[in-house]
Image (tube, rainbow, N blue to C red; front, side, top):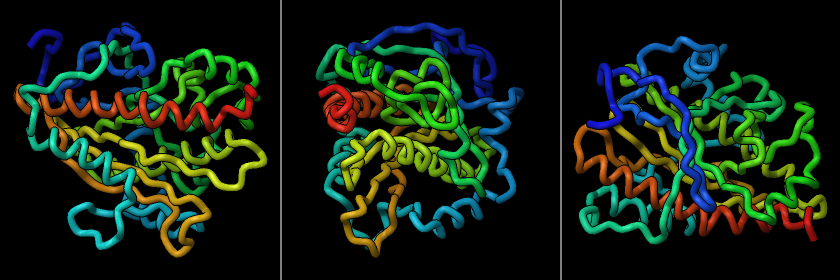
Length: 304
């Protein structure tokens, strides 16, 4: 297959390129990996996969025990009520992941992606739970700043504890001025699925904290839209959806629910790869039609 070389169980080193979509950018490697590397030879990769002081299972338990808990619910077994925005996103993706309409699938708008590998860590550390390791993710889907977001950027104050500006919970250069809409974590086939769950939960928790800092000081409650997340383990890709309960909602429920999981395709064969590509297009479309208007409203007070 063109653009893929080497051992099928090794991630090729990415050379950087950028193909910019008008409104949404996906940060991915130029040579799209068949599977994550079995080797971690950089400090950021080591941080990404080390468990820290607690095992992944205990990290998940610690997240559940917080005053503002994060819990995982399984779509197939939970008796909890699924929020409307979560259900809409799940239905849009489920049919494609089942292979329905894949052969006749067309993109609704002319997508042009920005492509470059970027591993991002939580910064400043205060945005992450102190008792848990500061985790990283491998890829990000972000908004390309429009005129309104660019004007608000000029008014944005430096991120407390970091000393520089960032819309996000990371100060990685290419991501500071481009709001993150979704994240992708990759795990090698021999890595624990539970480790990926703890990692994406810690990362998402820090993002929610950062978003809450961007709201109008006079605003009481922040309602964050349901957000898709992806974990690629070996060849196989899985979708999770995060829903955040506003403080005005039922206080008896968890603060954040991560709904798991929808198997959305793989790089094992062309048909599964088509499914994955279609799902990535749905997520990019969601970023443009749902997340972008919501984020513009969130920061609108900065540019009245």
